[in-house]
Length: 87
Image (cartoon, rainbow, N blue to C red):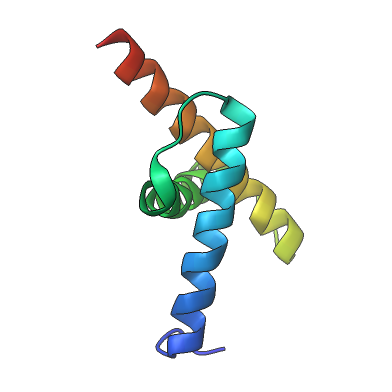
């Protein structure tokens, strides 16, 4: 699927929301709302990809990419909640 199609971006936002929602369930605590969950999911996915690449880990499967994105979102949600709680 080309990256400039509307369907691609809708799917990208949907998966970002699912990842953000799952990360919120895993970390526990108050959520960020649907828009916040989507943003955390997308940014967390990028963070997970960056961390995996820095560690030399590569995945070519959709399941592996989903797990890497979820791990990044969990890290981001955990850090965000830690900072907000201790501020």
